[in-house]
Length: 371
Image (tube, rainbow, N blue to C red; front, side, top):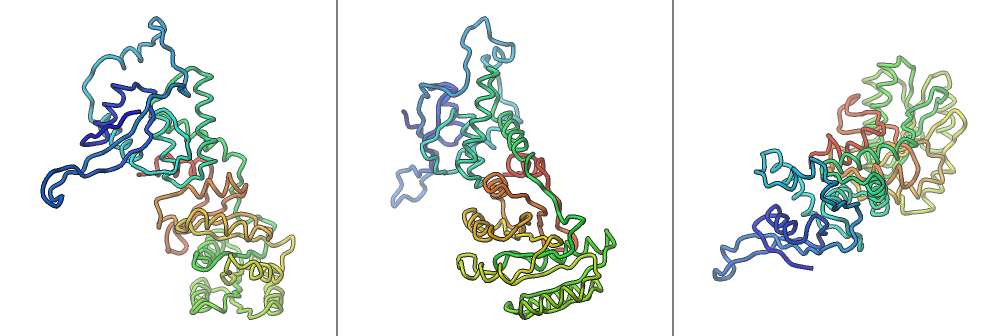
């Protein structure tokens, strides 16, 4: 184990690789102030990195000289870094600077870069570790070693592979009553309007609105505005009985969109009362609306509290208000529930999309991720 102090992370990594080799692991990194002026004024920021030699590398390492490929021989020859290599190194620096609670899990440097990015994207440690171990196992079996950028692509493929069993279905053809449920402030009403507008304007279906959100200030007025713009009927239900009557009144319509009041997901009784007043049948579907700008743990807690209701899929909102998309994996892989829609703005009927496995994997470690 050795401590390195350098002007930048690339400089520190060069020292580490030179002295400890490619199997070194980063144990800790932080910014420090170094200088001698009075009161600390004028001190320069440097990078302090603690690294160690991995005595039992997780990746296969072939050392016989006669077995080296042309690519490996070229890697051993000194060469001048190109602009693209410098840019790639800077991207790695940004990821390595992330201070994560690694819970004792360490990988060789290139693997650690990708693993740290998964954690930076707020993917749960258990899921991130499982994904990395699957990629490592394939590398050991194939007896190859990828660069950090290649590893990112391999991890991206592994995420996409795991999402193949997840459904991304929206409203089914046999459904008529569509409920939007979730905590307050996640964008249920706006999301309802986007999906309803698409159903009417693009799919040419007859639709109607019902709102039970009589608690939030101006909630009824907001949905009434959307109803007027789309020229569709709206009923306000102040009780479960009025909700039933409104559904019967709109029985001839193709789709009935029901906007429910936000619930305190930490109050068990509140959720139970809500579930008992939700008249569901084989022609109804319930979508749980969750905000990606919320804390990852809160998102999972909300789902766990509402899972007693027959949730068909999740709608992830406010993607434009965050740079961390790990909750998409936490909810799909961790809770085995599909994502029907993703919204990324307030524009109606725009700013909504139907996701798939490739799209979500790209948000975590792909072309959509600009971190």
